[in-house]
Length: 477
Image 1: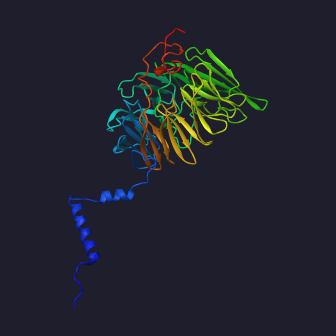
Image 2 (image 1 turned 135 degrees about the vertical axis):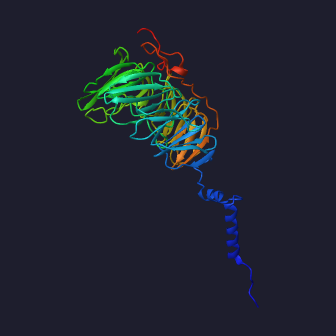
Image 3 (image 1 turned 120 degrees about the vertical axis):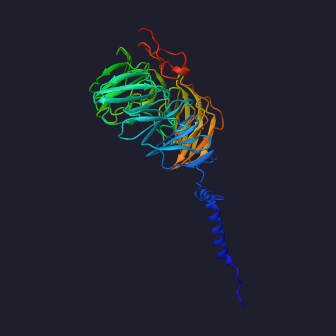
């Protein structure tokens, strides 16, 4: 009796595979992308799950929310993704990238290392809006783009632009910059931000351009008024001094070694006249790390405020504009985040984080948190990163109301008005707030040209800062 003459299991599988290949090659039906997506699908990076999750081409160097897009900077390329869906919008080769502009008018500056020039791209399309072929350094702000080009090592021009403008707002002469090609946002003489594990230092996005910038050139500091482009001072620091430009003042920080310790004095000078406006002694801004009292670091802080240590060991927050003590902590308390509006303080028992309003130094809210919890303040949310269990928490900075609580080992990479980007390795995802949060006021363009004056005390906190230090007012003094 003859054995069965059917194809058998292997034969039917082979016939099915051949059929699928034919259908895929002719475009009738192609199951392979879907199958590969299923094989390549990653585990969710948080609980609850994110709105979307995507794997990018390489580990991100930086991630920034730019309007309705997400800009991902990688080692040799930059890409843009839709904030709503995570879909890639465009990609191009670049060694560095930085976002400028606000929520309504963002641009992306890109360039190559060791090559002069940069391009400003539209975040949605990647189209070139403006190109520069000569700049050796670029600084990106919420309301301005600054670049510097040098015809010779001692002949440089600093230029300010509106983020989407095509004509310079002003130019200023600088007798040089740091040697070499500096790419994006090289350090200037300002404040040094506090950092926290699992919260990216740039999560808040670009800030408004300060009223003054301090450019170090050949051991001197050139102080530039960002409203007019005027170079207000050209200062040589003393042997025991470190200079910083914070809150519309030039700060001269002196550290003197005596009796086996460091004695500190801080003097705030008017930027136009060089006259002393305020003076404070005994506060250590952590600019010197060793007994020799050599100051190698900028003061800790953000924008117009600094964090110091009083002689009795208690931490304090100082106003760079007038030298006032905005907050003095209790013994054992630790400031973990600060901006112009608020300070996040870990209590001495390391069981809670307290938010304080700097203008009144009153407690706004208190939240239980572990002793190793880190924090950060952004315009839209206060972030707390906890361990054991690993969690990321976003709170309304003024009320402490929960915007989102995630069980995740991922890091907070970027914060926007409606949510934040978190990431782990090559995986990034978007988390939408569970409650509404009032957006900060739009910073607007750079202030227009104005005569040299002094920075005046409060009025409109929304656009000018707590003491109008971001608005230049003429008073003849």
